[in-house]
Length: 247
Length: 79
Image (cartoon, each protein chain N blue to C red):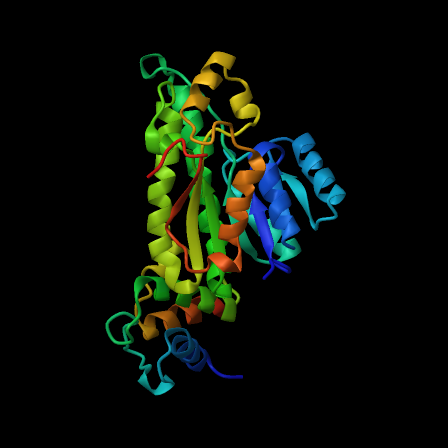
């Protein structure tokens, strides 16, 4: 059971959860292409993959550039072959109370966290359908299920991924392609490191396991869903949150 | 070299899993050959590969019968 010979595309792979996912898929034998918004980020991905002795590289991708998603998929397929695994991980936050939210903050979340999921999934499907094998894993968030004050935009985009995941899973299940989501809880990354200490302490009180999660623990769930072992799981959201939310 | 009509019919039969003898010029992919909407998308993909062309979505949606596929390919290949 390995991903040897398979090409994986992981967006937002320069650090945090995306980096852990890229390394996990590489450890399973996949050729991993990780994306970052900057050239420097892309080089950092190439560097850590090389250090891990993995096949693959980093590429710069600005998901909001028109045509960029299609172009990167075409480029990867030309160089490495069809993409078998897509992990839509790239995401940003633009937190604000709804009454104070700017149109730019709302749009930035939709353009970065939601639209590229549609664009990239569409672009990789041709290869997956032909191969009669494919894995799409969308990284959502616990707040898509629970809500969170100050994150109407972020939680709306993350909740949208649940519906997208289910509909696409129904569309292409007959072709051996599975589509699932992983919804992380509070994970110790740059995104959550910015929170004030007292807010973090309050959050941890609501986590059954009494601690923040590690990027590695999200990557394990993604690695499982991407593998052959998860062939009969599709349209699901796997919550990995230490018992912060139970559905 | 098989002609376009034979090549199209062969691909339709392969993609939709029907005997080539069932594939008539007037056959509708959905109504006569049992294709669903995803099958027709895949069929267009297969035609694109066989004839090394790109069929735009708005054209692809108009190809619903074997004859329409033959006509499209004939019109766009004679160049």
